[in-house]
Length: 262
Image (cartoon, rainbow, N blue to C red; front, side):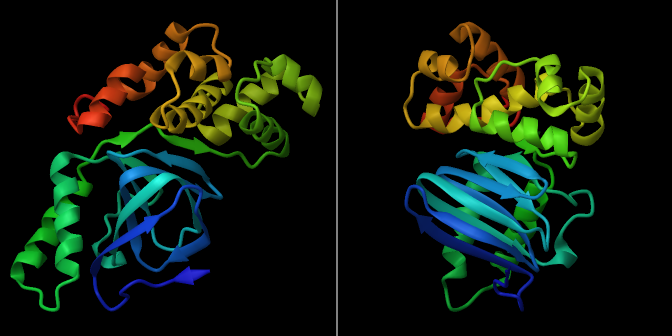
């Protein structure tokens, strides 16, 4: 389903609120979209994969990319729609970006100005600043790519249903009828990462909503198949640049930075 938002304008800022568990069914836009939640957590799902978007993160969605959105917690979505002529050529694919405090305040200001009957040159200057800030943001490892190969699809779908599953590629090879060497090569070719890296990325995307909902680090680590909270925290820090406790503390205070990676 194709949805247009302010198609006659090169830039639009929209505020939408959703309850926990709400699902926005699959659709696309003629405009590029920058999706940001002032509170709550979103999962964006497309044919190319899934992206988990906690507060302090945003996702860039290029024009005509079909996607659906699932809400975790009460979500205060603040989204920007950007005409294709103003979208940057270096961002042709969906990606999760670290939202700076400056960008957050500018987005909220743009939403406020959008509701006013008259707009002035200040709003135009604000739009230019927002776009400049977006295009300089750091991409974050919160994308879970999905394969085309049928055998890899069986593996990935099974792991998404049971993230704590600890089978090796030899085990999966017996299940799907391929050697571990073939499966390893396909993971690298199709997904750009090893089987182990994909499984870690999956567990990270499963861990974030649970941690933000208040589950303890030890419980989340155990539920996702880690032998200790230390091993889980090591993975978390390697991918996001902070331990789970540091991430949650910075998230709660809003005191985060691009350089820190949280």
